[in-house]
Length: 213
Length: 81
Image (cartoon, rainbow over all chains, first blue to last red; front, side, top):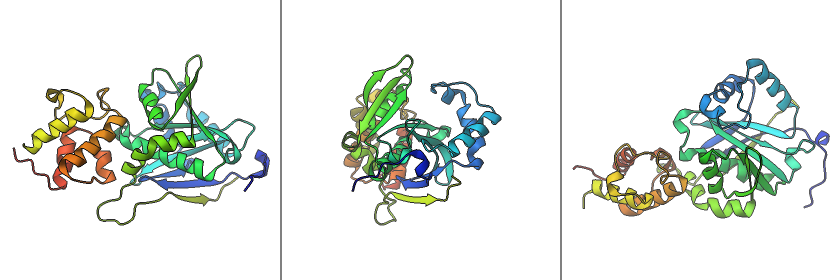
């Protein structure tokens, strides 16, 4: 079925809750702001951000107010076993609505130190990318990484990304659905096994929450 | 062959490192050779060597040599050396 063209003003901003690979992605709300700011201001995380300056409480609130009204940008908290462990986001070009864009930029950081550098860090990316390729109109995902962030370079390669360009202080990667599916099959199998006591493996579950927008 | 030595062999082979580098505190992402790709190979090699199928939770928690042994004990692999 052909997707009807739509401008950003014609589509309301849905709040997707995505559950897969042991984790739950919950849309960022006011209750998450201080946790996010604490992670974002952590020296280790800040060092890998393209914009590495510290965020004040006021800036964080303004950022949240802006993203609530911005259909080109979505942010989720990554929850594992009832605990917030990081944040993942999607963006599209400024004049587009994310739900109907053909190219999205993805970003992720694991704030909880116990899960940094852990295989679990792939779970939110797999859950979100599955969602993008199966529920949105996206054809390409892109990611921008600092050249000295070896962990992120390896991470993106493991998800099927290929380098497409180098900017002043960043490398840009891109992956399409085929490249993503071909590269992540084994990883998905490992992260979607169930506990021995349970039955069928979990499938991606998506719920829509009410949005203020 | 003891199960302790089997663990050392599996780690050394999966990560492509000498057996004498396989210590209890060797951990995921602390050496270049143990990245996510090698981790997938490692899990596969462990499952094959010990004839087990690890739960996802154990795949996630298997972040060091010591953890690998304690996880394998849950699957009735005995380390009595």
